Image 1 (spheres, rainbow, N blue to C red):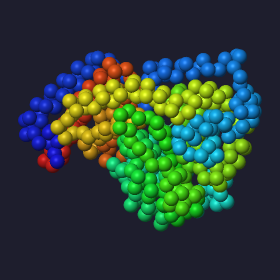
Image 2: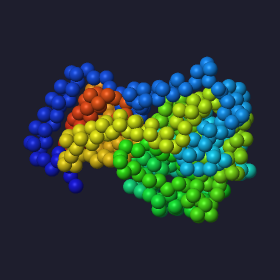
Image 3: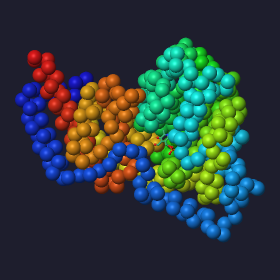
Length: 435
Ligand code: PLP
């Protein structure tokens, strides 16, 4: 279907471009400086967790079930904090350990250790890479920092199409089950970054039933948005380890989560869950790189959040802050671009992002023009492996951090830039055809 600009006569299109140019110039004069590059919690959200800072004082009891949080020991995390994270992920605490304050850091550590030492007695990924390329599957659009971790290690990142139910499982099965050089896949199964998609039960079951060609293939199941609901009817994600059990599979999944977007981003607690055998290996790797984690932080989190009900009550307050921002994105994009045929965008029930697609060949130009007008967005292409969006359409909108007033202005800029670039593309296409 052609967009409105493509359907116009030459005269109408020229008049429209002149009008949009004037709108762009008006915005330029406003001298804006707005940042929508990353999905960061807003200052109001930070304030929600400030009371946690009062939980530990100089007179607090620093013991947790015989573990002294103020000293070395308990490298897998203090019992109550492990239970808390296991509760959130609905897994057995025996199958989960804590690892510092960043889940991305745990993912990086696992990829690096597997590269150097190999998984469960298999040849190190790095050694295999000397003979032939090793591959990591990247459902796209996806989370740029995941893709960087595998790219940085030396993997060839392979994009996999995202659908409304999760990654295209026909493609995943075909690649994982037939190609032994495929070693991993990045998954954000609930409220995916950036599409907001939650994997359907059928998708989760197909992941759980995979029969990889490589014995050292693992699914990196990053459940970063497990409790990050925005709607009264939150998405439900089938629990992966239960699905694995049903499928009779065992050593296949590393699951991750953190409280970065529950308490303080970058200063939360992070966890990994895995099969008994895989977890034993992770414990060994981690025992070489650290004596133990930051148990004072674990204690503070466990005492403040207490259990899953405590986490959900806290997340309901985050949702109160975030919901108006997501509603504003929906409203402004509908008012500005609805019916133009120039853009589509996601309508997530949770998470941190809205995924926006403009016309083919538009994303880089829209983001560049918005930056010229003072609105910085995540770089176009970042949501694809090697920063290469093959159709140059996708832009990640991160509405959490700006105030509502700033977000409104940023969305006005995005709308004008999208219209202007769409109109210019329509003009260029015509000129190209005329040549
Ligand atoms: N995983 C996903 C999918 C994310 O979107 C983010 C942050 O945006 C992270 C992980 C980072 O988590 P952490 O702060 O625990 O490293």
